[in-house]
Length: 424
Image (cartoon, rainbow, N blue to C red; front, side, top):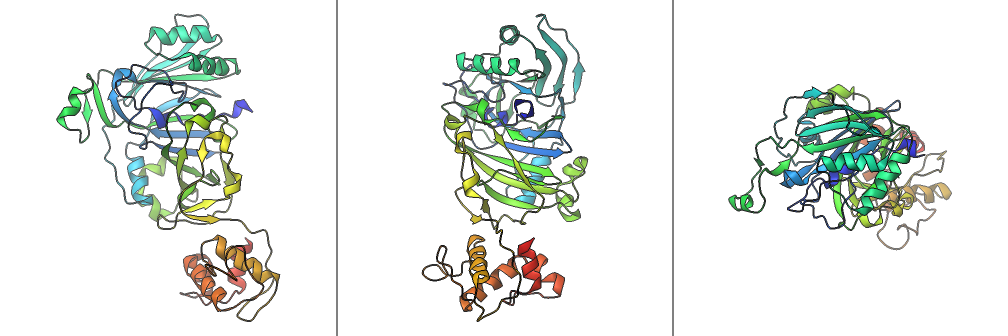
């Protein structure tokens, strides 16, 4: 199973402030390290036909000398520049917030030889704001020596994690450091910020990176991020022929990419997105509980969601040992396995009425807040409150339920169009 690891979470924690720890193995966090800010990271996972492309951008505040990251991949990766405005465009298309981008440096490529025999440097290059080295290692002590020579610092807990990945056959390591020759970048920082940390001082988003490699299943490597850091939040976007997501996490946007969406997010064009699912989740993560990795799951059909109708999916499916916490807002959406076979209207009675009420309550179109018809107290009678809730449901899913039959507003009649939509 470990050959399927997709390590994408390091970017959640790339911001250190005045503490001279520089080593993380894909987000391995030294126990006494302080990160600031905590909630600014964005990640895009594009998964198609076994090929994982990860686009990530951290926000960093602090001394650039303090930032150095190493993380493994289960196959040889390529590291390139990502479209500079991709997250600005995604944010704009899925919620009102529009952050400002930083300029991206030109790519410089070189190849180096390792000084340690068991460590092989495949390539070294500059990508955006980072110096990048891709390497392999067959001995963890030699890899640690190689990193220490280059001022990557870490504690004993990190050594154990290096041992783990070196022991896994076929892993590659990507070592990242901020390009120290770059001039300081300040985003809205007051003058007094300059006195808190020796230059080069960064305050703002770093340029996004694109990392591609083959893997069986997209995954967030929460196991490697266990630390005493406080809970934090990051944005996860997924793009694929199927809708990839984490159960029980707040889902703030989900839809199939069409021409209109692509016009708002032209940076996605390089990933051939049209007709694929784009899903955005806001993930709450608690590093102290990250004992296992998170494997994303997929659906070939997914309810469209917009920023005003945030939802949580399948709350009972979340594995709490991963460090991922359940969402804190939005309607819980469950999947009905009941097959509706007849039309229903006011006066109808039967188990299918109860099942319909359960679906409406689960989807957030409440039949009744309390008593008969409320969640857990659904009935077998189709009354006026069921009709009113069904009208709201039909209006919300107008494009799927009403438009195909030439209607513009809900009727409260559970006919073939609504029945087919729920059954599918």
